[in-house]
Amino acid sequence: SQTIHQWPATLVQPVGSPLSLECTVEGTSNPNLYWYRQAAGRGLQLLFYSVGIGQISSEVPQNLSASRPQDRQFILSSKKLLLSDSGFYLCAWSVGRARYEQYFGPGTRLTVT
Amino acid sequence: ILNVEQSPQSLHVQEGDSTNFTCSFPSSNFYALHWYRWETAKSPEALFVMTLNGDEKKKGRISATLNTKEGYSYLYIKGSQPEDSATYLCAFWASGGSNYKLTFGKGTLLTVNP
Image (tube, rainbow over all chains, first blue to last red; front, top):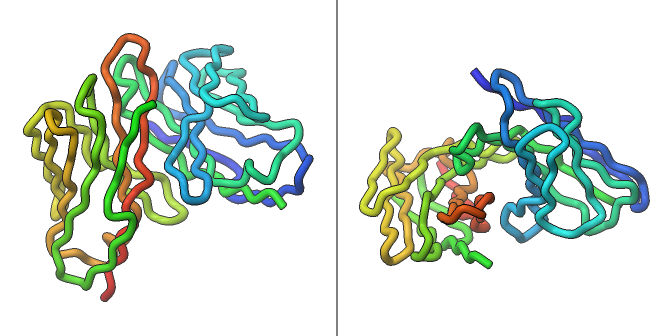
């Protein structure tokens, strides 16, 4: 069966510091991968999605970036965090053409101080 | 911009009560609607994926209905238990070749008091 891992589970970082969140998927090949964020008082917002290695699409302009160095690895990064980057970050996967059937990882709670 | 609305924003019920909440979405270009259950500190758990107008799905004490013509879905919980306490999210997937994302509502936070 497929499983998805995210780490770290929680993170407290000062403004201006870098960020790296990692997501890996097991039990499937060539998944579609997604990064979502839920900020306080808002719904889940899609940040990035990837349909293959090295293929990244950005949904919202911001100071975050994403990379997919391996088939089942998706990384969310920032060079300098802003206070507004605080939130709950979720990685998700889907397979093939059923992109609407997405399954989520456990998430990372990021607090920027 | 697609708008997905959920109501109420939060709900408190007593153990044993039945409850329901609503998800409203655009009635045009409908392809699929998801319901997720999201407990604190856990992953959102997929409850239902609904694609056909008039669909009705059931999982234990939880059921959902879908009306794509008028753009709404109801989620029902029969005989609520404290372990049902969670945020319930709906997400809309539009049809169209360029579509690529789920649009989420803000969720309904359900608290079931013992």
